[in-house]
Structures are given as C-alpha cells and as structure tokens.
Length: 236
Image 1 (tube, rainbow, N blue to C red):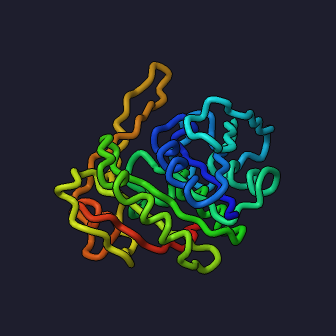
Image 2 (cartoon, one colour; image 1 turned 60 degrees about the vertical axis):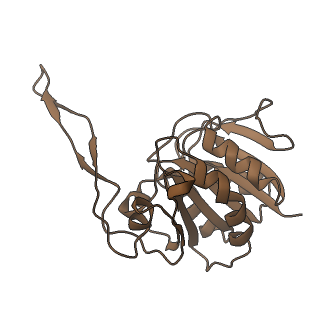
C-alpha cells in the first residue's frame, strides 16, 4: 500500500490539512506530521540550534490517520518524518490558506516542505487555495487531482504545484496545466514604519493584492477562476 506523508504551514488543526488528509486516505496509508501552530512564510527553514518535539495527536478528525504535531517547521516535519516515522512514497502539503503562486513560492512553508521531499527524491505535491474560505472548487476536484498527480512522474528536485481558485463552482472555468510561475507575487508588499522613542524604527509588513499576472502563469489562472497546475523546480 502507498504510504503518504502530509504536512502544512498553517498548523495541524487547520481546515485545509484535514480536508487533504480526508481525501488522501482513499489513496494509501496516511501520516500527518505538521507544526503545532502557524508557520507561514518559513520557506525551506529547518531547525538547527535547538531540539524538535513531536507528540501524537489523538483527536485528529480523520479516522485511520497517524497524526503528530511538532514544534518544528514544515520542512522539519518532512525531514524527520521521512527519516524517523515513515518511508513515504509521496508527500502532500497544504491545502495552504492562500495562493502559492509566483515569487511567493520562495517564502511559502507549504512549498518549502514539498521541496524538502523533492530533494529526498520523494514524489511531492503542494496544494493551495484562496484565503477567503471558499472551498467549492477544491472540494469538488481535490480527489480527482490527487488520483491523477500521485501517478504522474516528476524529475528529482521538482514538485507539482496546484492552486484552486476561490470562486463558486458555477463560476469555475476548468483546469489549466503547464502553468509557469508568475513574475511577481500575489501581494505587493510595503513596510509602514514608526519611529520608536529610542530612535529605532518599527516596521510591519503590509500587502496589497497584485491584480496583474502574465498570460500562462499560475496566478493568472487563479484570478480567472481556473485550477492552476504546474511543475516547479526547487528555487533554493
């Protein structure tokens, strides 16, 4: 039986990882090893200078899943998961809360975890969707895409990157494959700042949605209500 390892960067109790695990149990033995809380924008970060704890989760809401929460990063979860817990045939990451398109991929813990699997020669698929809680398209097509892309081969150090649009099913236009990584990210960032009493500067990241995207790109597909599927090579 195929062994599947699942992680994310939104934490083990996030809705997206539960939905992904519920679909994945139809394709093999599932192990969920995920951070114990929010770890977004961790990229491919791994823990070097302190220990990592992992604890069994007894209340994970998908029956038959081996579930563990960890103090580590998403990439940590894949790294020690493959070495210490399960020799997985495939690693799935997500479903991320928010698109992983364009240059945002380089920051994504969801993508970073998938790339960690790819580095180890394990088949990896990263799943993401819009951040407004609209799951109609992912609920309808997740299982179909899992069945298809668990079987489609990848070169070493590459991943399948799949993004679901945040639209109603009646507005969904179809599945676009061969999508390239958009030039630029989903957000255009700035760092508003204030001056502190000691003369220092305090900054907080602020992102405005970027509506432009190149034809044929992952982000263009999502904003036009298509599922985006593409192969991405490790950006590291």
